[in-house]
Length: 325
Image (cartoon, rainbow, N blue to C red; front, side, top):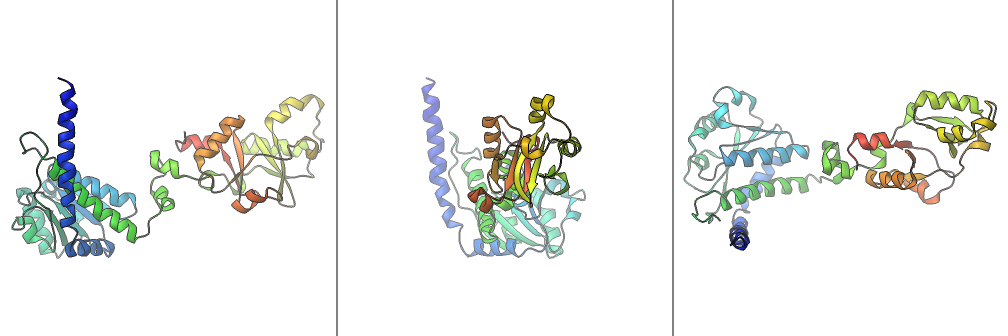
């Protein structure tokens, strides 16, 4: 019966959920020392492990890197062929091994002990090779695997990963990491792009097509052609007076001359967005209004709507470049 698939899956899931609660046993004084060591590390946080523990090590290292903590993964087997030269005395070594007795760890442990490199060992056997060589010992509880044989690494890998994540998230909290900092390390990807704000993507400075309201259409055309955004922002005493788009020019070309005053042509109440508006919302506005650019102003100016100063322009090409959808 295929319905039995669901029963088996739920049984496995419930087993792991029950076993993962044992994580609280590891959150002790040694865990505190491990967090302090990571926070005080002057070098890189180097994660290592063999097999499935190695995969967990790679993931935890990637998590540290993603929040601005210099980290890389070092394969103990490959380290025999020179990779250990990457590990320096000021670095911190976090080694994952559920049994703690994997033979490939031996040379890495000897190297670290010889050069005084601090080791955080994560294993389930207190008398294992790894735990004996570690400066800080995080002893994992024995757990019941969730497969039918009770032998396939399932619950054991899950709890190891959970402990690694607990280390990472605790460090992140103490470093007062924020969404704003996260997007710096993730300019691309779904998470990073969803955190981007208008001010992160807007064009500023010399890239802005701006002109004084007293200028003529002929002078405005030169700026539009030079900046290539399809619009020009008309300013009056450094405040936004209106905009002129290339669409406006095309529609009124027959009755216009190069001497035409911009005030007669411009749209006086252009669409504005605040600098801290999510980029995804800005794109939604563009789609709804069928426009390709938005003027960005400060949060304060956005609230009052009058006498607003231009901070930048957010263009649809910038949104698409960063994968905003």
